[in-house]
Picture 1 (cartoon, rainbow, N blue to C red):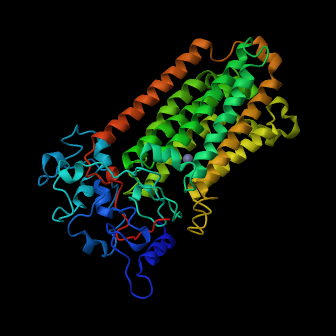
Picture 2 (cartoon, helix red, strand yellow; picture 1 turned 45 degrees about the horizontal axis):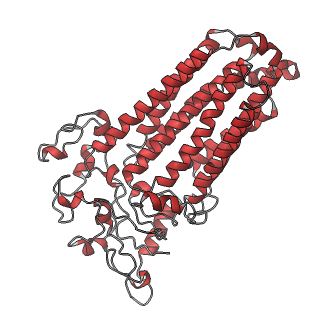
Picture 3 (cartoon, rainbow, N blue to C red; picture 1 turned 120 degrees about the vertical axis):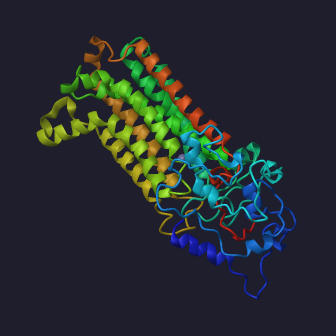
Length: 477
Ligand SMILES: [Zn+2]
């Protein structure tokens, strides 16, 4: 959370003029009309919609630090046994001992949980942890201030948050309500159907299926339809619980990884520089892209684990996870760009089309928006509903995919006569095998991360959702 956002939150915590303090969370306030009992921060983090004894005093205290301090590598260290903790708390050691679980909830996280507090459970088997997170029976009111666990917080976005324990029905209904996720959902839901339409139109064109060299185009379009749909679903259902949020985004990352593999098929078939044709790189281009997709999924899923303790590291890992396959896939274009830069107009068929240029520009913008969190970083709260970086990121991503499709169509068109005489670089059996292995491998990676998340004790901050912005008073809209 940046300094301006924190200042805004502090301002909202200040008692109203006249000295009438807002009610503590967990009490019915005058503005909520008794409709909805807002759970306390701690109770919410522990999965309860009721106030726990002694919480009122704590809710008036200064907020807890956003993440437990540590010298280095929080969440990445191998866990050391914690002799004083009960066996059930020794996650990563007693519960399978996997590296993922160790990273998910490090010893430092456990030590940061004060065991003497009457608000805290003695362990994951405590009855106070066994209850489900509160769910709304009807469309939930939005939260005008930051209320939920840290894992739901987005830098620079101060309002429009959905309840962090929404039901699936509420999540679907919320896509028709103005929240800070609504535009994220629709900016990928509508393009899904645009790409489905392009896929059906191309596949149904006369003579399209008769030519084997058209196949890579279809392989590209399948994940181009899948990734916006997966993203739309992830944004829709991410407010069900901290665990659901992580799993939703694991699937989102998997779909993006498959899209990076899908890009390699038409690039290998239509976009290779003339001097690279039939080279070793050309032959290994698709298999290497399949391996890259595993790396991309693994690294991006893992990047969620140090998110609370080391947000910077998490961001770097996730950016690298997606930048690397993008750079690899576009090697043929970068080479052609360099060739034409040197040769000028004499580079012939290696010249890039305007669509290639627009695609690369959109990709650059996509990366910039993802990394910079602009414009909401400059004006926290101004772009909560419309115009924040993630919405612009979605728009740039789908525009980039549109121009990429046009570009590979242009490359295919310019080489059509040559392609008709050639065997495709990846035959039908190779295509099916590469896709099948990539889908299975990526699903396995996602299943491993999901299993690690599901087996983690509820005391783990990442599963709880991280420290709450303690004492923050939320006002229902
Ligand atoms: Zn998104």
